[in-house]
Length: 326
Ligand code: ADP
Ligand code: TRP
Image (cartoon, rainbow, N blue to C red):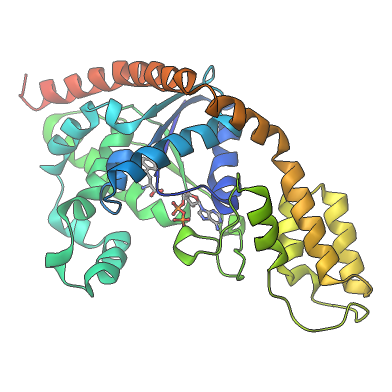
């Protein structure tokens, strides 16, 4: 079974990315042949700073490797190092109905944000994004694609496009199955909304110590005194985050003390910071080692790209033969 997924290099990765996407992807390495890539072509639809793209691409690579992605088990590469996907995207675009793309929520939402709905202000890449995503998936004969709920529709588009091509030119592509992560995995941010870079409410996985402590100690809570019992302790943001980063019995104990009364919010936040720091301690050490040896990291990525390219070249060749380009 081939498992494939992509992550955009669009900023420092945070606890939402980690618990929602990275940790499940790292665990899936055990279940099949994992193919993971950093979607830098995709990032061009929204990020236009070249230096930042370079920086974020490296950051994602370091973050993933430090958190347990194992290059011996998994093919890991940077999307643009396998340019065959861009060529395949063209072939796929010719069997993609405009209407299919016009219906995509993510395009409609982004278009609305960028230009108050004016289609003229939206770049074609943003519109064609699902076709490139289909190429990413189909170029590797992927069987399973783990993604968040927001990508569900893009997977449906991929399956549609693969089906159209197969119908037009004969059996060429494997039809992939989505594996959609449940809503339960939504990690709350510092303000209680879903943690997201766009809301500036994140706790970074590898944030600097002082700044992260300050962020966590700055979480705003209500003004009930410490002694007062808190029957809603399970809704407390720090308790929710503690459940992710602390051992289950420790988190349960803090929740219990908050519910019973007698635990101050300051102490609770302090515990949250300490468990957060401890949770990523080993990964932090690995990240420092990797960052000191960037040649090794770029070697890993180029080996990954070679392996990925070998697969994509074969699939593209199959598609070119089927469609009469060869
Ligand atoms: P952001 O919202 O910060 O821009 P992305 O949209 O780039 O994050 O998300 C990358 C991956 O991380 C997606 O698979 C998404 O499902 C997951 N993810 C992001 N934020 C959260 C969150 N708060 N809780 C759970 N998963 C999340
Ligand atoms: N669109 C995905 C996101 O924004 C990233 C992505 C690009 C992807 N290509 C992919 C995910 C292929 C899975 C498979 O999160």
